[in-house]
Amino acid sequence: MKITSVKPFILHVPVTGSQIADSTHTISHWGVVGAQIDTDTGLSGYGFTGTHAHLPSDQLITRCIETCHAPLLVGEDALDTNRLWLKLARNPALQWVGRAGITTLSQAAIDIALWDLKAKAAGVPLWKLLGGQVRDKVRAYNTDIGWLSIPDEQLVAGAKRAVDEGFTGIKVKIGSSVDRDLKRLEAVRRAIGPSITLATDGNGKWDLPTCQRFCRAAEAFDLYWIEEPLWYDDVKGHAQLARGTRIPVALGEQLYTHDAFAEFFHQEAIHWVQPDVTRMGGITEVLRVCDTAHSFRLPVAPHAGDMSQVHVHLNHAHPACAVLEYIPWIKDCFLEPAQVVDGHFSLPQQPGASTTPTESAWAKFRQATA
Ligand code: 0YR
Ligand code: MG
Image (cartoon, rainbow, N blue to C red; front, side, top):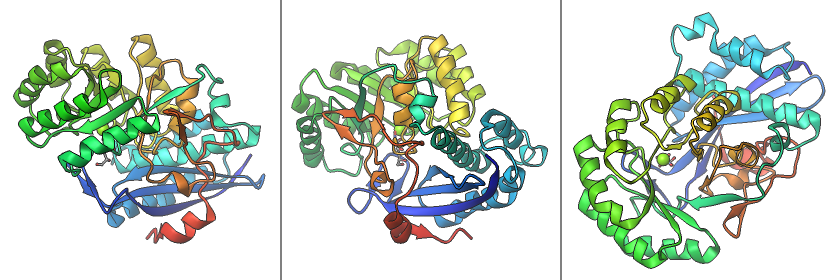
């Protein structure tokens, strides 16, 4: 299956409401920045990374796809995912300017498109290629009800609504002030009762003493995890926090490489492993992280940079995956939207990675790539 062309694209898709905020970002759109890979079989594959829809930086990604990655791909066999991964990741010219960042995000789009092609060529949904279904149900947790920008009364109402819809897990953002965050979590826990999992996400805002103070008080709310409590790369800080609190530590959405995860594993600085196919150079690298996590007996809860279009395949097929994030912003842009019924993700049925955009998404949300 010979690659004939690699074409970048950018979609900017509105979030729920007019905007949402976590402790570090306020955004109005999610960026679906990707690549269409055409082949001599007539099949096309689609892959993308997830951004905060800032056009100038999105265009750095599409430029990297178009001018750095694409020339190394045209003429190659699309099925050679490992070989092509190395060809791009160890491209001496690019390696010198970025082993992480724009280069990795753009590689993620390519790698996902190649896996989409591989599955389409085999005529099966991606989870089948990843080894087949190892669990009947993938439990979803809802993040979209827990933004920091949601006022307190609405937060409680939204949490209750999610539970009524069938979700058995939710996530509430923290990182404003410890006192406000504790009050919100207390109110939510009271409203949802003891059996719904309640996770919390700081998006890397706080320092260690603030996290320790928060955790001491928050242990009373039976939190499922505290996510990105500290700066993303601070292995020692996370290890220290993990040793001192009963709340499990989750992280990974901002890590680019297997090596970065390995350091957290070795230092016992992580309990929940949250790789993201859209940040890590694609499915090829995320599989390595999932395998290592599994060998450390740590559960994986992928971060939804893909808004769970691709991760839903991984979660059905990899033994380390335990639960998956649900944010519904971009699902309807795809032929097979990620779907949650009774609190669990449906098993994808169509051949591919669930990354093929619809005509109408193309028409409505497309941006200039240069
Ligand atoms: C908004 N999920 C996250 C969004 C979300 C971020 O900045 O990107 O909150 O992806 O942390 O776990
Ligand atoms: Mg997060």
